[in-house]
Amino acid sequence: MRFPKWQIGNDGQLLGGLPQLFEALEGHPWAVYRFLLQECEGGRTGLKILRGGKIKDAVGALLSMAEVISSEHLIAMQLIPPVL
Image (cartoon, rainbow, N blue to C red):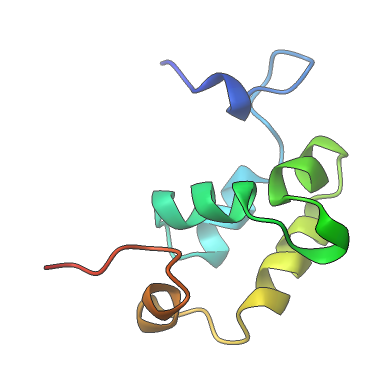
């Protein structure tokens, strides 16, 4: 199985915290991708937070960006594209 390079940590393993983000974002891969690249608290991206080993902080930042995680809300936040 192949993963994008940014999903791999310095130890060569899948970056910790990705499963928790997928769960919080109802499994939407584009939403996870956008959250990881979008600046959140303190000007850091979700990816920088995860690379720092702060899984709970990353999930907390995600949840602070969206009080209610639902498909409609994620579409409104432009974290996932609408289904046509």
